[in-house]
View 1 (cartoon, rainbow, N blue to C red):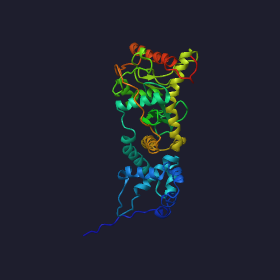
View 2 (view 1 turned 180 degrees about the vertical axis):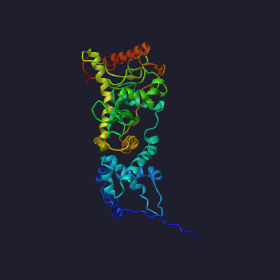
View 3 (view 1 turned 135 degrees about the horizontal axis):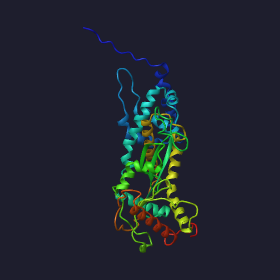
Length: 380
């Protein structure tokens, strides 16, 4: 009988000392004694890290085999979070944690996907009609914009040009990127994200090609019914809207500022009030990039891992804001919702859709200069 020969696996001496000298087994264990430094290292404090580990651990754990001892779930999570927090190269992290470069690449993508799968239903569920109404109430009380369902914008995430990609990822800023399109609520939390569109695509094009944009156009988002503006019943019920900048199209449920410089006083007031609500998404992107420093570098990883990492940071952003009690507190309802719901916009260039969207913007312009005026806005 022929005897089977056991396959030999050669591991470098440096990597064999991982459990004695690796960064997770030395430095990270020391950081657990100092919560402030632990938070600076991972962007999560100890309790948040352990809570996250309890959610993703079963998805990323591996078993030991006869050939090698598996990297445990906590260390795999630490490697991924360290990449997101710093944007260091796979090779740098591999030397620090005493693992292979290909091991780091596999762990980062796998753990990032596990973080998204474990957290998305908890911290970024698909909004229901009640959720949209709650968001509108928050925007009214915090940012003085009634019937507002969220702020929309896109962010270019700078990447190294993928092989054989041509000019697909090349954007107008002269860099290569993928686009993160986000809808943000009044509490700086992401409600909808779309990741992976080519950098050459405009914000309006990203919206049109996204699942959210198609649902908005088709009227399948479950938006609340039209509602009266506070103190302006004579204007009649108005649609709930998202606010965006001039890169997006004007629609019945999507408001953009008046273009140009020769604007009337009422148009300037409208632009000011819209920009005040729209800046929430800009501020949220600022918080995201300050927290996860990978956004401040040219990210040189595969497009698939890039999409997974961006989505992971978005749900981690919401996870941190919820766990540090920075999110929404209950606010009384702004009143009953009346009249018809979202109407389908079949074609942006159609005359009926254009007239309706212009009418809605003109109504909000009138409201912000009369019943909805606030003391600190420009004088109309």
